Length: 298
Image (cartoon, rainbow, N blue to C red; front, side, top):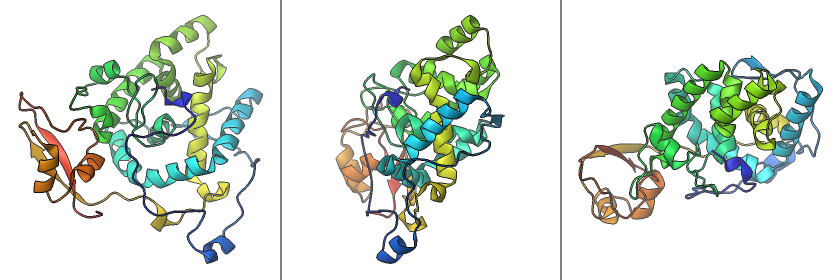
C-alpha cells in the first residue's frame, strides 16, 4: 500500500486506444476553456466519507490546497486517471456498497495506483496495492501462478475487509483511510502518544500526513473535471468491454492454447485476467476459478 512513494504511474498492463489532448478535434479545442495554470478557488467545504474536513484550520486548508494544485497540474497522469475511472469505478462502486464502505474510498484506490496494476518497490501490487502477507490475511490467493492482488473484484473486497476493521478500531473513516497508508499499529501509536483522536490533529510522517489530502484532491478534481481544465468527452473515456465468464476447476497446462479455444489470443487473455501470472494455471486442488473472456474489442 505504498505506491504513494512513486511519482510516475507504473503498470503491469496498460490498455489504451486513441489520443486525447483536451478534446478530439479543432472545433473542440476552440470551444474548450483554457487549462488553469497554478491556482484555483478552493472549495468552501469538503468531506471524506461524510466526515467534514476542517478547512478553517490554517494548516489543513494549506495542505489540501497543495494537493489540489499539484494533482490538477499533473496533466497527463490525472487525465489518464479520469479516463480509467470510467472502466474501474463501475466494478469498485457496487463492491464498496455491498460492504457498506463509503463510496469515497474509490478515490483511495486512485491515489494508491492510478487505477492500474502498479508494482511498488516494496512489493505491493495491484490497484489496491496489497503486500503479499496482508493479501493472504484478507483472503486472497498469492502464488506463482495466481495472484489475486491483480484481480480487481477480489482485491476490492479485501480492501473493504481491511477498512471495516480499521473503522471498528478507530471509529473514523478518515483515520481508517490514513491507516491504509500508515498501518493500524502505526496510526494507533501516534494517537496514543499525541493524545488526540482526529486525523487532522495528528502530526504524522509526510506520506501519511499527505495521504487523505491527496484523496480529497482527486475526489474534488474527478467530481468536477471541467472546473480544473480536464475537458474529457464521454467517447474518450475507457470502457469495459462485454465479456463472458468461463468457470474452470482443473489445471490448464497451456494458457495460450486455452485462449485459442475461446476465440482470443494469449495477450487478450492476460489483459482481461491479469491475476493469471504464468503460462499455465496449476490447480491440483480443483479450486474453481472464473476466467473473463471478452466478446468484442479485439
